Amino acid sequence: MPVTRVLHRAGNVRALLPLASHPAVDAIEADVWVHGSRLVAHHDRPLGALPLTFGWGGLHPLRDAVPLEAILEAIAGRADVVIDLRSWFGDPAPDLARALTTLPDRAHLRVTCETWSIADRLRAWQPDIAIAYSVRSEAQLRAYLAGRDAGRIAETAVVVRHTLLHSADEVAALRARAGRVGVWTVDDVDRALTLVAWGIDDLVSNRLTVLGAI
Image 1 (cartoon, rainbow, N blue to C red):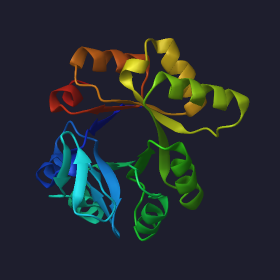
Image 2: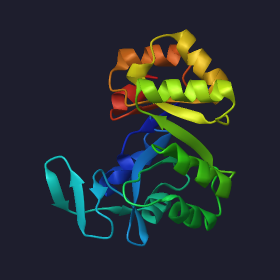
Image 3: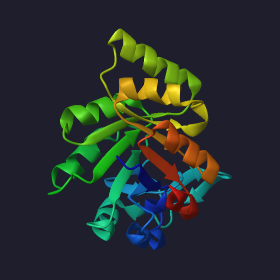
Image 4: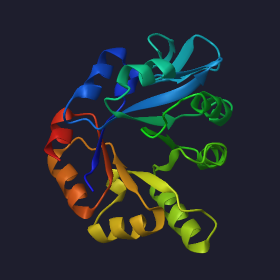
């Protein structure tokens, strides 16, 4: 199967949504947060329902957040959508589950979660949605492998920080437990080609040149 090429954070910016039609892009990723009663994509963390975000340099006004429905409408039929469901205050799983329930076509939608318990709740409510755990550290990776081997964790796809993977054997061992392995965020062509040769399923990059090379 060909590797799914994911354009990192393109869903966070309205001007980048047309890149869903680019021949090197199979999916567009968006950082999705709950802001008040809305699900929006934004690079920084919204502060609850306040019109503020927290990011590099401290507090900033919340500007140019892209509503989830605008992303889905803009790229419908052109690319998949990868929702990186983010959490800080509260639990975004119920809000996203309600939003997804109304969608007529969810085959081209995937969700990754940095908080695994949120991923589990969302999967319980929406079992037909493809859910993946985001693995951001060596400790998380070891916890996932140990949990799978002990039967504490159900088979769940993973999207892994690419620097945590060092060989084709590691990728194969992870795929045997996860079923599907994605990597992020790969902005070097040689590294991307190596990971593809090792057997990863999804590759996230900021650069069209990288996605176009695989």
